[in-house]
Image (cartoon, rainbow, N blue to C red; front, side, top):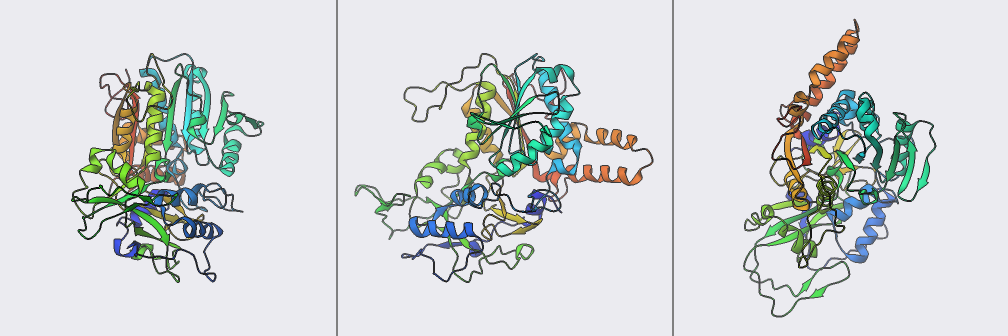
Length: 506
């Protein structure tokens, strides 16, 4: 199955084997690599040298380097003749399978705009992680068919960290229109109704004007954001930690610190694999024979993230008493979900006693806009041991060939909902719904038949259209229609369900 999550989840349906990937750090470890050690990529060598200097790094730090490092990151480095997407790349996403996917997201935008009173101006369309620009191209083409809506859209923002992908997106969406550098990024003009399109490296650079109505799309974005992983460890009566591991060096603990009588969270960190490495994902379908440069190890002492992140939600705390429990947490994902919510519903005023005040207070007289999140992961449970890699449509160890392998992890949809609702009193969350169910409720089959009628006697063309739709909606086993989920963040309105989540046009 040559799709990004399909290949990953079908072939990596079993969690990474603990025996193969996780080792406990020995009492004394020499992190300096052997002079004769040959690393699979220059980025692998850089990561190994960083570990030799500062010690083990978090999975989040490893993912961030592998995906977005300016010195060989998967998304930020342009590889000659190599594209991450499509049949010749590493994976295929839903918008690449059928244009109807993007068209239905555009129709969802139209439905929400209508439900919110058909604002005559101030609309913004924002996409985070826009890939090659295919999804936005389909959305803008659809929106351009609704003249009143198209006239109300003031600007389009694409959050993209990769210069190479930005150039591909610009060519598709703007053609030969000039690209100019501005204070927040780059800007050009869309070929559809001449809308300005602005590229920003981070959503923090996208202007947040409370008078605007933002419609935000995040398709296969959250799965690529860095995660931290933690394991509940039973208390050891002989273990009396005297220091706390910290990136700047060990911190001495007070002698009065009580010895833990309950399990503690310990972080799973990344360390070099012994050379020659045979540490690879254990399922036969993922055993590619490529040696891994790195491995997962269990930290012997608490790290600052282990003391902070697992205490953010009762969902995490409930698993602490069960030694061996593993949880994955993506603080960056929480930050993005909270940002979406504040743009739509305004922020919750922070109290003077708050230790974590909202960075920028946003007062929005009338909540407006919406966010649609489409990704893969469990509907309600906490992801555990889901880190995975894919290359050339085949699963591979995420610790092999850093910078040349796409790395991702399951999305914790419930944590995104918690982050959004905690950030703004002006929003509510619907879903997650299975992608297949959502697309069918949006009329994907009816749209496919309309296209087929236009193909006349082209039976092969009709077969391709219908086959693509089946790939998107099939809900058996690990098919896309089941593993992908759809979640919406909309203005608070007493529980009125949006289209696709049990509601209809008003």
